[in-house]
Image 1: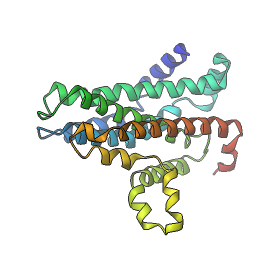
Image 2: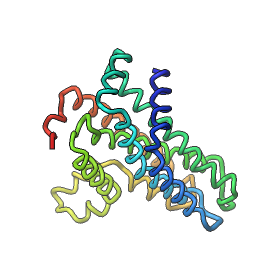
Image 3: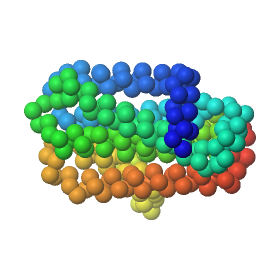
Image 4: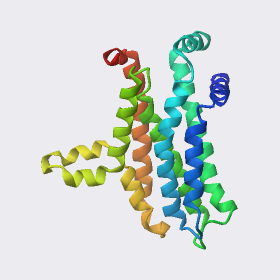
Length: 240
């Protein structure tokens, strides 16, 4: 699997498909720290949200780097379709780790944070990026051509899911009482953001641990759903 991950990473780098989302993310990151000092928790929460939105673009472009013929050849060499797609997930998760660390290291190196900086807050900042990035990858994979053949439908679908995920708290108040429970099937993105509004780390425990478990479990379910739908040939219903 290590060889497959290296192959996918190099193939993606050579494709330059990562340039638009990476450029937008870096610009958003730098603009977020235009003025200083910045509070650690709320600032890293904002950039984690940026990563959550843009990892969708990264994922869709990455999963579609290979054309169907080339992908079929990769499956033959890997001798396992599951192994191939797991390698794709792992490659994207490694990208999430790199961007998560960079997103927190940049303001530290250039002194963009205020006096309230601490190791624990920096760890929380990295974890915020990581869990939201992994969630984004897991969501976006469900809208790739292996599941939904029509690219336009895929982009519209994932854009709708992103918006609903971010606005789920407001959506709950807009729904009738008997439908408000449906919001709980959405990922806890607003819950994480609300925890980051303060500056007191002690006040967010153990809630932050529960939210991380929720995000991790949600991502795992989406990944399992991806493989189940793919094996069922679900994309045939979306020929567009």
